[in-house]
Length: 456
Ligand code: PLP
Image: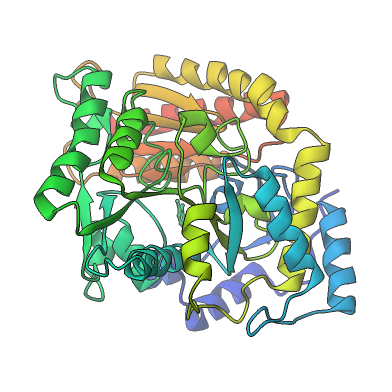
């Protein structure tokens, strides 16, 4: 039986929501007309709404619920920590046990000598920290003018002024006067949309070499760092050509600029290894973490910093921090989440079984007449909707119109799948079973059929 918590009727909730609740990335007037879908409960990979409808959540919330919903162990740890020490800060020479333990655990899990952790409340805050870290690093080394950060168009690094500036989302830059100064964007390695006649690998090299060109044009003495998601998530699960990251790494090494891997989505098993940097052979100086760090059970972000950068920062007072940096309850929750990921071998299971199984099933969607490419990396998937796969053609009308229809058809069929323009993407909980993957792909196929029928 589906349990529905005691709550007012859906229409009443929707009216209150429309009257008082401003939603992120939402046209709120349009939402008010339709009424929000109110989610009341979740277990495993399944969401339940206020009317008792169930949905397979192929997005793990916002790419974050890696261990799946409804793990009581986490609730118990949080309650215990709230009773013991609900809050204390880590400013001004104080610390606490969960913060210490989580920093040490992340130092153990992170690759290479990434072994110093600065906590934040979200991925956005962690990326803001990174801007200040790399600029402070170069200033401390006597090069304050080395302050430009290079990022990519269509990247997503968060929603605060700094992190949204690092991101390359034009609609975000158009609101609020972004980007902030000294952030430079190069093109993304999105072969399907932008590769033209080039092979994937030629294109990957060409796009990576834009970094070299930008460094030369801006001046190597001006460029502080490059930031990139190993796989761009919100940009549409843009799986880079294999040639891309090795060339980016070569360029960062050659010009001595810091490399920041934004692992907010790719971290904690999403790509089949603990970190996307390991999947792509990236050796970052700083990693941004959030989402899967707590599987979304509590808000947390972190910058994990290599020894060299940490040593320079530690030699000054870093005038930066958040009230909730290393919050004891979120730190305890994150530790318990990491325990579950490790003890249940969830990352190994992704690599050995779940990702290949998802990859095989998902690839079958390429046979649908509306689908151009169907690809996965680890537990992330993407399909391009197209009127003509061989030409990699776009639909007439606004980009995203068809994707939106498809997304609505997914909802009608008990599936949460996100659209980015006319691309459908997934990032399910890592614990999804084979039977649930089968259901996911069947429902996606039905949604594609309905979308196709509507276009005729
Ligand atoms: N970086 C990446 C790669 C993300 O995908 C996101 C969120 O989707 C962020 C940063 C921002 O994280 P948050 O929403 O926790 O601020």
